[in-house]
Image 1: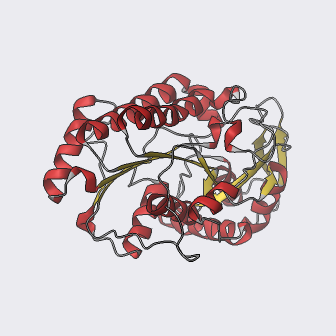
Image 2 (image 1 turned 90 degrees about the vertical axis):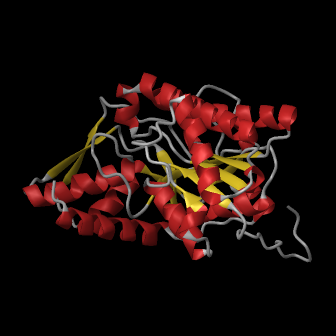
Image 3 (image 1 turned 30 degrees about the horizontal axis):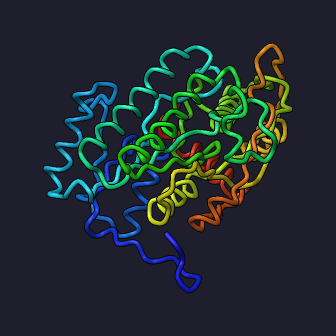
Length: 335
């Protein structure tokens, strides 16, 4: 979609119906809230739950589209699918469940997109992962570098399964004229994140470790690796805004990064979280555990140029809000 006189054309959501897989999860719940703030009504959004729709099953994917069309009275071309659902976790979870991560993610994405194509759905928004990039991608990561090597080994099954959504959407566009877009968000964080130590990512895992250590009177937390890898983080509300802008303004086949352009080492990140939580003890680095990918930082120029997205939340503010949210949740539901 081109700008007119420097302004983006206004997107009309009034006759649209959205199917948001993973809409009850971390990113999905923030996305649904941001869409309501844009004026979408409850009845315009279908959020499938796994108990009713196991999207690994073809019949469930078919039923989801049938039910959404019947409930909304929308025409297929008025349907927009935002596919966020996935089996996902931190580095430890990836090491322990590579087969499940590959199968669950590739089968959900493949079947959802095929069912959408068969129904004649108007647009399919695939939310991929930075784990799709090669292990030694030049920094900052450019979208054209996606195929220049194999992903970091600990999360390759997950990253490759998600990357197949890009292949599928481009193939479907060529053969069927299917309007599928593919977004690559960097590591997300924010209120409502997954703080389960068995499956959480680095920021919620570190917050949990620090608060638990304070409550237990421990003078040490143990962190995997040596602290040298770097990561870029995107606040979850910013990610939701990026997805919405891409849905409104972007209809092209190429992958697009969503990030904040701010890079930090895991060592510095741990120190910031220690300071925010008030933990007074020491950090012990367990170098017998993997570091993961050495560096992650995206080039975000394409998102700005093609649909006007730029992150607006500073890392300091976002991290502070995340710690505060965890403390509220932890007081209500102590471990």
